Amino acid sequence: TDAVARTAADVVQGCIERTGAGRADDGPGAVLGLATGSTPLGAYRELIRRHRQEGLSFARAQAFTLDEYLGLPPDHPESYRSVIRREFTDSVDFPDGAVHSLDGHAPDPVAEAARYDAAIADAGGIDVQILGIGTDGHIGFNEPMSSLASRTRIKTLTEQTRRDNARFFPSEEDVPHHVLTQGLATIRDARHLLLIGLGEAKAEAIAAAVEGPLAAACPASSLQLHPHTTVLVDEAAASRLQ
Ligand code: F6R
Image (cartoon, rainbow, N blue to C red; front, side, top):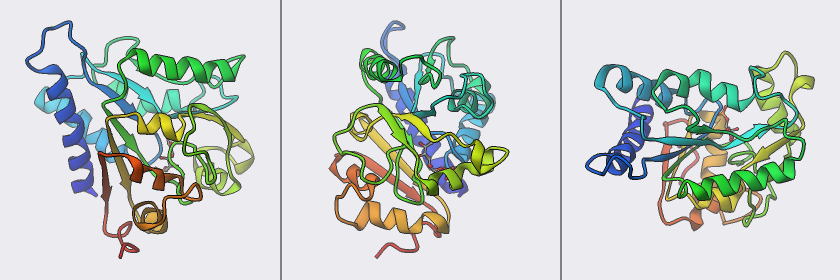
């Protein structure tokens, strides 16, 4: 797992150095796509360590989170806007306003989804998108049978995902039913995808994503369409691969 975290951090650092170093100060910096959840925490911790101890700077970077619960106010402790700040971005030096999230409390969530896709495009697209995977093969909150051509939109969580995420809420009933999520085609617009799978619970989903047929039944299999995807797994998550 430490090796996974270090390798993921290397990819992000490489992106920051390529897009930042040696360019005019007003050139575009790195645009990072950030997943929440448990999986990327080791990578975020490693990036915070490199920031504090090795001078890795995010001062010219921007970030976009992947998804958000609908109905939670932006400052709710479990909104992904709050979570990504607490777990990562507040501990490094992103400029003010450079960490973008979906507003789960927007009066018009359809318009909010369209605004977000436009904001990503305005930033020049995402350079590196970090992704976890659900036990059902979801990426972002694109649950099984999501359209492979989908853009950012409203989705309904499956009971499985609500159970998986209940650990962050007082009880399962408190997990929102609806979310906003970047679509599968939105995710594939990123120039480099970094899918991380950790633990036995993800082994089946990783095997279906990497070796299974390209199918909406496993949304992560849509990454097979992308010319530059890296899959990082620990031994347990790799255990069902052929
Ligand atoms: C989080 C997200 C989800 C998670 C997935 C795995 O922003 O989009 O797809 O990556 O549910 O969650 P963890 O990492 O908590 O096992």
